[in-house]
Amino acid sequence: MASTIVAFRLCGRDVEVMVGPLTTLQSVLRNQLGSTSVKDGCRQGGCGSCTVLVDGEPMMSCLLPVQDVAGREVTTVEGLTPTEGLHPIQRAFLEANGFQCGYCTPGMEMLAKALLDHNPSPSRDEIVEALSGNVCRCTGYHPIIGAIEAAAVAGREAGR
Amino acid sequence: MNLRGSHRFGAPRDRVFAAICDPRVLMAVIPGCEGVEQVRPDEYEGRIVLRLPGAVGSYRTHVRLVDVHSPESSGLEGRLEGSMGSVVGRADFVLREAAGGTAMEYSGSGTIQGPLARLDSRFAERLAESLIGQGLGALDHRLATEVTE
Amino acid sequence: MTVANYFLPGSLPEALGLLESNGPELLVMAGGTIAMPLINDGISLPRQVMGLRRADLDRIEWADGELRIGATATLTSLVAQDSVPMLREAARRSASWSIRNMGTVGGNLFAPPPGGDVATALLALDARITLASPRGTRELPLSEFWTGFMTTSLAADELVTSIVVPGGPGETTFIKFGRKNANTPAIVTVAVHLVRHAGHVARARIALGAAGPHPMRAARAEAAIVGTELDEAAIAGATEAAATDCESFEDAVASEWYRRRMVGLFVKRALSDLARPATGRGE
Image 1 (cartoon, rainbow over the protein chains, first blue to last red):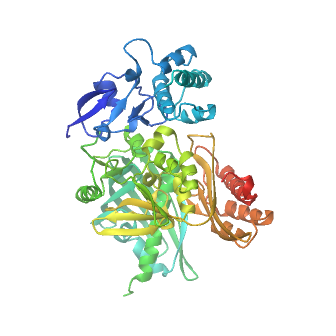
Image 2: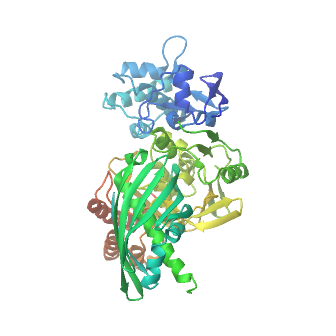
């Protein structure tokens, strides 16, 4: 089995990993780089709990060979968190009761980040559509949608 | 897994029977078949490569002719083995003379084991029927274009 | 994992070379949205895998009155183009945002039953595909690509490199019906392309997805509306023909009976949508 070294950027810093063939980004992030915010829910691309951003676009890390992101910018929730306090999206989820068990939350927050970066004023329908790949078993989704609406408002008010 | 189907051939019954009971011909018309050799009278071994979306596998094949009643009917006991699992089963067919050629009816059943068994059995049946249908169509075409001795 | 080698070629010639040297057991994938779930689940156990994400086959361009789509162009890039509205709609209704960022147009042609929604729209648009091998390239109408249940006419040493959609006049509509409104397999997908002259249907293409082993044209339904003014009687004839002729099947989301009824219902809806006056539609 041939190992290879893959270099990419994770949350703004350069990283390098040695991996066997077809190792997924999910596996690398969780097992080698300590980014356990990336969850391991289904490995089918069906639950969204492994969602990360690659060059700002949401992808299912469980289906993504890490070699495919060589040289790219990967972002997880660990990169969303500022050195002090919370990112506005994290604050919005907290204040809207946007999570219970928290398992889907990192994926939901990365989706929210990507959505608001693309579209700072999404309609409720657009939020619902954007979340169609992320499953939540606890909240019934309304608090999550509310959190993203609130984050959008906060982002616009802060001139972001 | 249970299968049944029928097919119409443009060739006369004895030629169709001879071709089907020659697994070398049959395997040559099934897509992905690579290499067949006779190991005993009425027994053949070979290899087939199945390329499905997201899953490619090579399988050893073993076919034995049983209950041969030329030119009317026969049975084929078969085994397919590969890293993705195995299929073991038997198919029987009956040939009748019909206007313009030959009518065939076939039925069979098989047991799937290994990773392949985790797929929906409806998938396996529809795939097998599709491969068989394509093979019989190719056989019909081959018999039609062959020069008769 | 069983994989001994994962190749990520940077060009088509490199990819074809790897395919030739590794033989038919090389598993080829582009977005990975079909292959990786099977590999992760231990159902597919390849030893050699090739990914096409970095092979520079993902361009979309409008040229000489045609839309040329690179085989590894993502479904998201199809949503982003506005040269062919029906493709934008079909891509939008496929899977979820993350999957659309990964899944490709070429890969959608190989989607296992119930089949790809973009593939169905491409069939209604009379798309052609280009296949390349070390022996050269050939072009094929998409209608000749599928040969049966999960089987295609792709040779063991070939790759799909592009899909070409002809431009030209035409009215289109696309409906996908599933158990949910998003991120769901199709119970039936209907894609229609019509050309009318002086109120009469001159040409019609009705492609159905999830109504057979692969996307298929409903030929008798098309014939039922050609020459007509797309009135109720014509639509009823097309509806009956499409439902009767389709190769309905049972799977996890629909029984054979229900699926056949939905084929009829949604062909009727699609044609009725087109029959309404143009100002009433959001085309």
